[in-house]
Image (tube, rainbow, N blue to C red; front, side, top):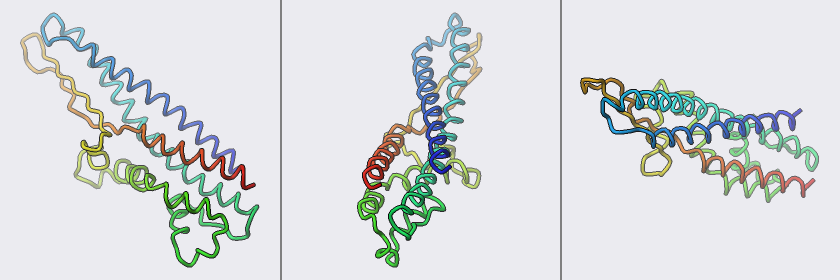
Length: 212
């Protein structure tokens, strides 16, 4: 059951990843189609603008779902690790969540309980991204975002981090007055996070295949 649930979550993550790539492509291509803001181009630009807005909404929704499902997937690896450890030792690391799982390996009183040194070392040295990107974005951008006065997606993905894609479109009516404007919105670039997750899962699969 643990393995089946884990594979389901990975399948969902792959689906969301594919949808995000498609929406990003539509967003990019739509931006290229915007023409000079003249009366002649108004109808065309409005059509492109609606497509832009739709792709932006898709990206925001799927980004949220991706982050949530990635967190569920990582929690699943903690449970799966505990399940696999039963085959090599009576001691089981905490598996309530991936965050608790990591903290268990950091506690001095658990040092002598750690049989799988290679796994423990990798976990502690190569998963900073979980706290800095995945946990932070899930907590601040989704679960607790309405408790903050900060705008959507601002704090966790800074402009100088190279993880922000911006989209902006302004259209005017026939008299030259502003008709529709889509404010600059910040979108997390999840490529690096996906690479981190895949890197961890690759190690996880290879390590336990050899260990067991």
